[in-house]
Amino acid sequence: MKNILFVASECVPFVKTGGLADVVGTLPKKFDKSEYDVRVIIPNYRCIPDKYRNSFRYIHHFYMDLGQRFSSVHVGIMEYELEGIKYYFVDNLFYFGGDRPYADTRFDIEKFIYFSKAVMAILPVINFHPDIIHCHDWQAGLVPVYLHTLYKDNPFYYGTKCIFTIHNLRFQGIWDIKTIRALSGLPDWVFTPDKLEFHEDANMLKGGLVYSDYITTVSDTYAGEIQMPYYGEGLDGLLRARNGSLCGIVNGIDYTAYNPETDENITKKYTSRSFKKGKAENKKALQQRLGLEVDENKFVLAIISRLTSQKGLDLVRYALDRMLDDYTQLVVLGTGDGQYEGLFRDYAWRMPHKVSANIYFDEALAHNIYAGADAVLVPSLFEPCGLTQLIGLRYGTVPIVRETGGLKDTVEPYNEYDGTGIGFSFANYNGDELLGAVNYAKKVYFETRKEWEQMVSRGMKTDYSWINSARKYADLYDSICR
Image (cartoon, rainbow, N blue to C red; front, side):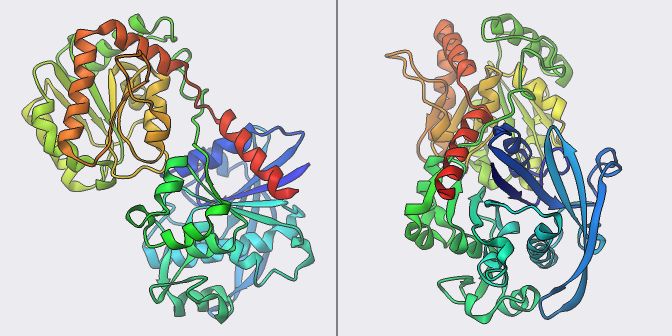
């Protein structure tokens, strides 16, 4: 039996701001419980829903120092079991009592330094000795650093290895060395250019990458991209140096939560065999619900996304007037930067029968859109993995993507000559190329509907469930524990 501990700042169903939470909440359930005891530890946020919080079980509490700043800081331990997985929650009202998981950068730096050290202090108390601590993103970045410094002589941790997963390299946990050194209590010698120092500041993510035994990220292509300056966010040199212990493993999606055959949110359930009728009924219901012109012959294009520049929305803005011809409707769901929220609201106001701008997030509506749209557009500047295209494939909604990161790894482009492919793609970050990919998709949809339907069927039959990803992680755990 191998003991695996996931350490992260968020986890479904307790708290979620992005795809990180889906990974941490879903992946542990996919391992063989007779071979792997996988547990998860996250902060005990006040914003976790009461239906879970009220059932948390108190385990213990103690006090620890937090570097040179605080000599006695409360650390509480709560426990909850769900679907056979034990979850531990680090309890401290000062750090985790807000109404959202993240606040301003300075306070987040401090609270995740606290969280990382608390994780190390808690494990002997609960008597869980991990063979592998699997850390996720910068919020857990100091865990491997503590393991190899302040806790390196603690016999409880003998044999423990660390894996670090990068979900998005852009976010790194950077602050000045003086503050991080004082809060963490780490020795001076870790704040050097070959360790935590980064352009004269300290970088928590870099610490995790330097001190982990192995590094993963969430797609093969992204693992290669981040070793180049354009995508490397200043860490490409370090990642090239760690090339021999770096790999990409594509995220999966929960095939129970996203299943058009059983989805209670959609109007008409369907399978890969009955999708023609099922998607037609869902399209009609979606058009009616959103006030679009009800017409089964319209090409309904969806954008379900955070509305930020990373998601390629400046390309959409460039091409939007030419995309919205008389045969096309656009449905947008998400929140983000004001410039993009305003863009889509403006088009929805001017073209209410063509454009629906839903500037909020609603999980049930997202399912309705996946079921009712013909295609989903994901033109990202960079995309470590991406879930939107995987969910689209599951619902028979053809993805149109830019060839970057996980989008390139998961969407094989349509080839009209040999009848292969499950979506459409374009290579360069260019608005005209995006428009060309959308127009090509519409040409196939309107002129060769049989080929379109075969592509939908192929996409629905692809397997991007978590089972495949879990198998690769299990192989990695086994190789590291040898």
